[in-house]
Image (tube, rainbow, N blue to C red; front, side, top):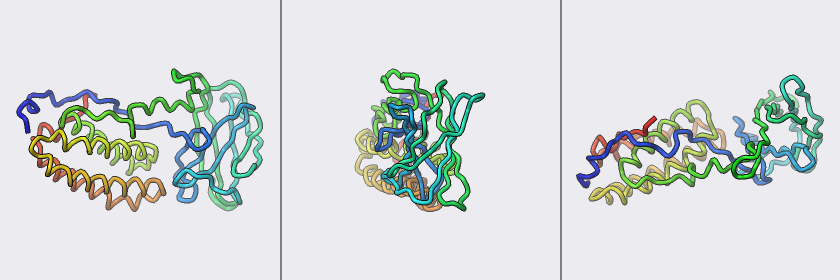
Length: 262
């Protein structure tokens, strides 16, 4: 390990402390993450006619065939919110024209079967143009520095600061069923970790296999989250913690325990 690394200020400025992303589905709509093993995702988009199109998506975000499922949506400014008329068309639910007056919250209630408990979801329907030109509720330009697009820091200390931040967010996400956050973190985490060996001096050979092990455990957690079976994430989370402990032994404590500036 080069001595110059030890001279760094280990309270590092991060590339962004909020690790949630805007996910766009196969129809160009906003994906809402659902706590359901049967319907893990719902996609919402308002078409050119002002009607909302809603698709139910599986873990791979492919359309689910509509059968017994039912959906209700309440939309509009708070004092004027109303329940929309909904019909089924192919693999989509289609509403009548959504009310004017956005931004406002759309409240969706999905029943996967006639006797099932309704699952409630909310979408901040904001059609204000973002800097990208897209309406705010579909503005995935916020993903430019997160998930698969995260920028890998130039130093081992910088990477560790990000890894420590992501580990905290992953732990919180699994505990609180924050599926969107888990999705983003498990995309960014492996990319950050793979940048570590090349920035580890004479520890590169020892770090590389541990990073591969870490990546495998992250994939276990990611799959458990995608299928909404977080009980199956436990072995992966334990593996991540154990692998991080071994990986940190290769670095000075100041480097391995670096933190992002708040």
